[in-house]
Length: 94
Image (cartoon, rainbow, N blue to C red; front, side, top):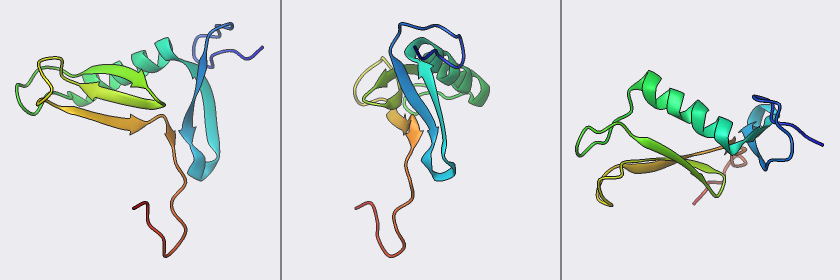
């Protein structure tokens, strides 16, 4: 059975994180991922553009969402857990 690479727990849902461009993939539990991104919020002092409140983190659909819980018009953006491959030369994502 696979274990979280951060806390070694097994029997929990593991999410893939890393960078496909360099073929680096790790399996990490949601609890550890939230902690990792909360540390990023602290380290980089990520705050809401509207009110200056420190951002919160949630994991949804393989994306780490950084959000302000003050309202929908406040900061809300995400980062892929698994960095996708770059599009082929001459192609774009859109």
